[in-house]
Length: 154
Image (cartoon, rainbow, N blue to C red; front, side, top):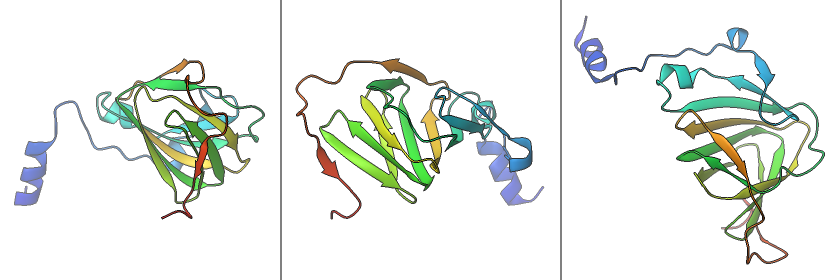
């Protein structure tokens, strides 16, 4: 074993392993939203539950908003690969994300997906691996029309 290999072996946290998620062996499957299909990239198993990563893709265009909800997790990160989605956030903003855009949501932050294109694909990462979705009411005190934010703004 050379020095680089020895160093890497010593710093690998217990319960974690290298994960290789080839498309041919990580197929899409149904998931928590009926209009998406999900591809588990194997990080939950590889990290001993510390994180999760899925590629999700639209099966059909969204027929109705998800409704206000939040996730029981520490954090969630979404990177849009293709298509568009529009989300309302409890901070009073609404944003449309397209390919190359991303957003980070701390656990417990309420949001509502109101539009998803038929060709939407995204990488979704959460910490820890187990994530729950809790439906809730629209946050009190939000204005009727939320402030739009986009990638055209500075």
